[in-house]
Image (cartoon, rainbow, N blue to C red; front, side, top):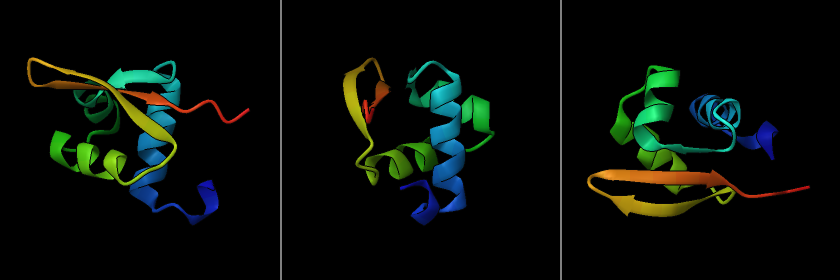
Length: 67
């Protein structure tokens, strides 16, 4: 799946993995240097991740277990 992803999506997924597989949009944005809106849009387009919760303006994302 990673081969067909855009560079930005690969960076975001790598950051999410580095953060332990679960992180907020803001944490991922900080790790990648991308804007939070761009991170949220990119994550929303991926089927490998799902939204865990939305609270107080923060969305928490989790990598889907593919193993």
